[in-house]
Amino acid sequence: MIKNFIDIENFRKKQLDEILQIAKKIKKNPKKFSSSLKNKTLGMIFEKQSLRTRLSFNVGMQKLGGNVVELISKDIGFDNKREEKKDILNILAQFIDCLMIRNNNHKLLIELSNQKVLPIINGLTEYSHPCQILGDFLTIHEIFKTYKKLQITWIGDYNNVLISLLHLQNIYLFNLNVVVPEKILKKNKSKIIKYKNDKIKLLSDPLIGAKNSNCIMTDVWISMGDKDKNKTNHFKNFTVNRKIINLATKDAIFMHCLPAKRGKEVTSEVLDGKNSVILQQAKNRMYIQQAILLYVFKK
Image (cartoon, rainbow, N blue to C red; front, side):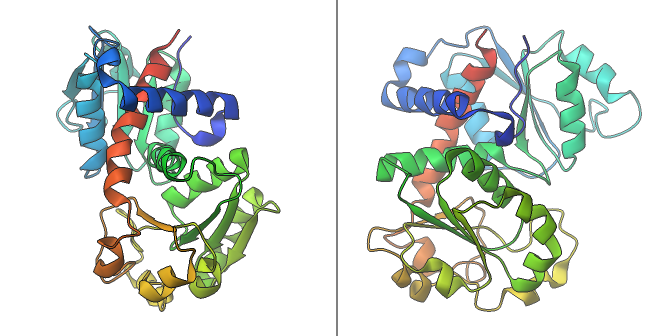
């Protein structure tokens, strides 16, 4: 049976717990897993820029004993009509064992995964970023040991990272404040409301949202491919600064999936400060990616 990793909402809690446990085991004893994917090959297609996803999948696969080939979209005809995408995928399946795609077409990922000829992993689309959020959840597990009584607060845009965070919350039911500018919240309320439960609060004031939070998360205000360059006008007072951090609990952590626009969504003081766990967060991307790879390969 072909396993894919497209969206967190496609999984049950038990399956996600399994992936998280695998990641913890790999991090604790990497040598034990150094030949787990020997003779397996991961193909990677990046149609969007990438630093952390590229490194974490590439290095992570090699540390599991596997091989990696980066496929340039235009060179293999994946970005044009030279061949049907389904035909390209069928050919790739003759040479590689798994395909990670980072693109701006979530619908295409779903179509390819439905072919069931090769495991497909979502490395980021315009709709979601499941690897990032599951890696973030691994970091939260490490720092707080339990998530059940935590208050997590998102301060920023309604974007792909937030969607995956909402998917995760709907499964684990932790307390989540979603703090989005009022105009953006109104524009996307019909999309957000389907995830709403009694542990989610929708807010537009970062100062209210940050109060007594254990974890504050943010992201850039304008994502790659976002054509609304005037969107930043909505984010007045949304910069995560020391004032916002001071409203959180004493042991609160600050998370950012990176890259960050210093002085925009977050100040350098916070990004480089004692509450920031961005480097632990980035490194954990590799362990969660390795766990996802082992999960999709597991029969």
